[in-house]
Image 1 (cartoon, rainbow, N blue to C red):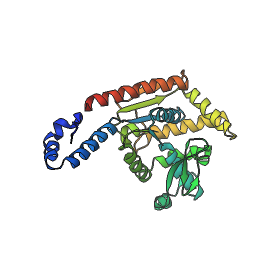
Image 2: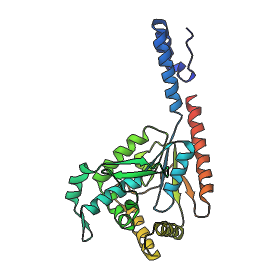
Image 3: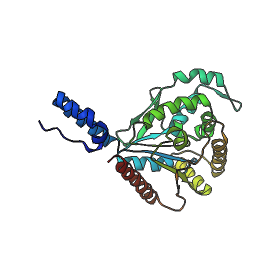
Image 4: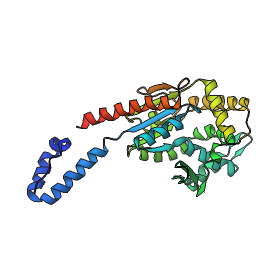
Length: 276
């Protein structure tokens, strides 16, 4: 029987591997192939995209995941789902949150993503119901920052996000991905855009969904969310020290994607060089 040599593991596993060859060649062969394919999988990277609301984080993240054949996780949608649940349960009243009721109900919240076979897009389900459209409403947008500052909510959702990030081959966007959820991500992107452009994009998005909103409402909402995101006590929005900044104010979505993919391929090649 010919026992293959698996270059990435020769140095570390030679004594064990070639000792196993002498005892049981069949097991050695299986072990070698297993380690080889584990190594191939380890060539994948994790990509973290952070930034303020309406900078186009999800648009970029989805496009990158599709191009790289990676998984995509919309962490913002998860916080929106908790916000929608709180609204429906009446946990908001007179500008305040019934904290005790919300925290006592966290165990009742189940969410998952499913790919819509008609659109090919991932949609969020909350306790068995598709709420993808509902979580994008201005009402939810106006309250989500208040929910996202709650430590218990963040820890519940971050635990799921960290588990997914550890598997690699994932693109994740949010506000604390590169600093908290995936601090070891091989590529971190901090997305930014001019404030007026962000407002125009958000306005166009909501109007395209048939929602009756004014530009003044959009400006107020973005200003409110920016303040809370940057100043909350738990995991405030920060640019990671090793993040690459991408300002998409004056470039197209296609140009933005090409820049980001260029960075991703650089990171992938760098990782390959470390394990080869």
